[in-house]
Length: 403
Image (tube, rainbow, N blue to C red; front, side, top):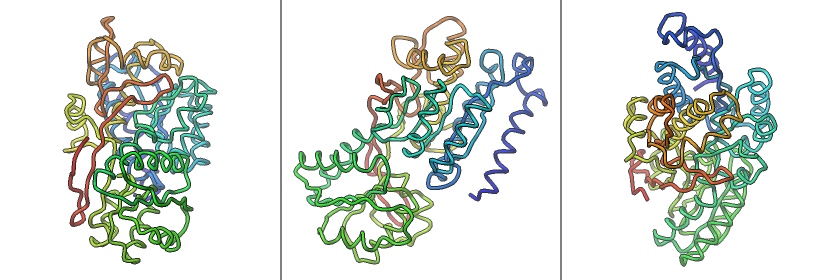
C-alpha cells in the first residue's frame, strides 16, 4: 500500500463517517447531537508495521460502526480520528501530540512497535489519555503510566518462555538468536536463554543488528560459526526478509523461527519458495472458541481473523464499554472503568453492543474478547493467552498447533 493510497483512505474515512448522519443512516439519537465523540487511532499504516496497521484499523472501525448503528455512546455518534505512526517513534510523537493537544481524544488505540509505544506512552499518562497497545516489550508496562495503559498482547517475558519451550520440544539442542535493535530484544534473548537451558537446550549465541542495513551477511556468518540447529529471527518484516535471503545464500539448512509479524504473507510473496520453505512462525492466538471471535469473523468478512485483528476488536469494545459505564468520554473515566467491564462477576458479553444494552439497564458486565479473556494485571498486562505455530510450505502457512 502506498502513502498516497493511505492518505486518500484517511480523508475518505472521515467523509464516510461524517456522511452517516447527513444521509440519515445514523440513529436519531446520534443525529440529534452536533458534535461527534472522537476516539484516537495511532497505528502503523506505513513502515514495518504497515501490513498489520490497516487491518487493525478495519477491525476497530467495524466495532465503532456497530456502536453507531445501535445509538452511539452517551447519545453521540462516535468518530475515529486516525493518525499513521509510520512505525517510527518521532513521527508517532508528533501524531500523538496532535491527537492529544488538538483533537483532545480521551483514548488512543493501536500502537504496534514497542519503540513507538515507549515514545508516546508518557504523553498519554501525563495528559490522562488512555492508551491501548499490541506492543510486547516488558519495559512498557513497567513505565510509570499510572494505569493509563493496557495491552492485550502478552509481554515478552511470557512470549519468550513459550517460544523457548516450543523450540526445545522440537528437539533443538543449539539455538542462535538474531535480534533487531529494539526495546524487546535484550529481554527476549535473556528469557529464551534461561528457558532453553531449563529444557535441556542451549542458546549458543545472540546478536543485535541495525535495522537499516541492506545486507546481513556478516551477521549471518557470525551465527553460522556456532553451528546452530535453529536460528531465531527476532525482528520485523523488512529486515527479516533480508536475513532469510542471506541465510539461504549462505547455504543454511537448519530451522528458522520468527514472529508472524516478521514473516507475513507479503514476505512469502516477495521471496522464492525455496527461501522461505520450512520457516516456523509464531503469534499469540485469538480465542477461536469464543463467541466474540465468531462475531469478529462475520464483522470482518474473513475466515480466520488473526491476533492483531481480534485485539483491535477488543480495544474498540473495551474503550466503548468503559466510556459507557463511566458516563463520561474521558481518559480518567476509561481508566477507572475498563477493568470493571472486563473482569469480575458481571454478565458475560461478547460484543460492545451487547454490553452497552446491559449497561443501559444498570447491569454489570464482563466483556470476553475475540482475542481471549480481557483480564489485566495491575500494571496492564494480559494474564495469559495461547500461541499459534505455523510452518511455511510451498509459499503458504500451514498450521502446526495452537497451545
